[in-house]
Length: 409
Image 1: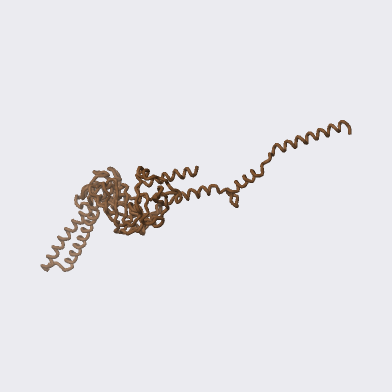
Image 2: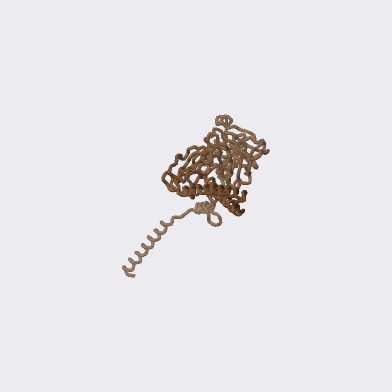
């Protein structure tokens, strides 16, 4: 081997040693025990499909809080926080359905006035909100058609007068054997026709509420058909009107409707004649009434039906458009297990009652039934005689929320 070949072999050995050292440096060894522990830790959070179940474990802990957590509290702390206790027991409950409502005009005591014929509004002496009495002038209209009607009415009256005179003359002549019988019969027929035409012309004015007199005047005055309040007035002086458009609307507000929205699942509990209690800000105390109507059709948008309560409105304090609440009262019934309504709290979408224990309180999930706002029926989860937090139980709910937060941390 020549010297040149010897140097080449030595150089290749050096390069191989350097590459081996680099490979060992980039892949450090991991202790077997440590690798196994890491693998087991990862597998403990994966199911057979490779999904991480650590969040499921946290969710189970939150769900178990309702039944498992306890709130430690001494007698002194209970007294300081004002936590009143009571025992679950039987009570008479008059079920109450609490519904949103609105005051509305009584449609059966509302009148929309229209022009008897086309014309021009001459004057409108009232405005929206004006109280009016029956027979009070509301709108004055100049109408050529009314002038023609009055002319026709006057002509009919003149023809009737002439027909009566003719009939009396023919009757006298026939009795004196001067004229023929057919002349009397013709005069009698003409009188009957004139009476019919005059009556029809007069009934036109009576039907439209227009005074028949006044010669051939085109002026017509629209008067209030009932006492009430002007609630709508779309017309103004100088406006052209006809019989197809309303001039104004008058409502008798001495009696109003209160219409409540009833969910579809509560309709079976609502019937005509059931007692109702209406609360409105304008009234110093709730007003008692009864359901006078239950709508047979659900609203397309709300999917609710209408329950109507008719109320007297002395002093007109109840104004249409006011918001109200209606409590529909069912028949009283004896219930074996009840608690104070404010003792029932909602935690994780479950109804909970805090039961008294030796160390403090423990939340217990319950199934609630009927309620009258003061007492609530307990169907499952609580036995009669169990002591529970009846007052300020929301403080215990807040403390339980703090425990949840600490558990999540």
